[in-house]
Length: 112
Image 1 (cartoon, rainbow, N blue to C red):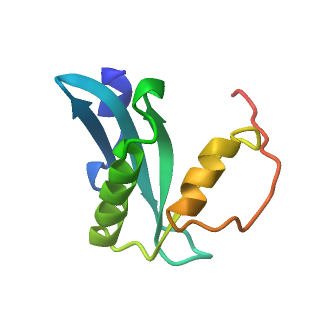
Image 2: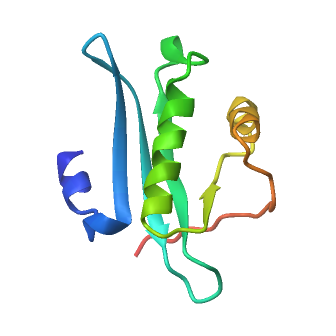
């Protein structure tokens, strides 16, 4: 994991925030800024994980607020997040925090 974090370059385009409670990591969130030809600068939540025992207590919301502030500071005009269609609880969480469902798509991957 340390090596993966070190590879996130340039650092100005990526951030990682960690939630700690009683000296224990209870969650983390990763974010990256994208500058693409077809859209204004935006940021995307790359991953958000909160310990199951700590869910619904505000850690996820706080982490989301941190990446939104980071994205604004980085000059991004919007935030995006992708979530597996099966993760209904996560969908509710994002909608509760102001995110709107705007697209359904299929994802493809190829090892190279």
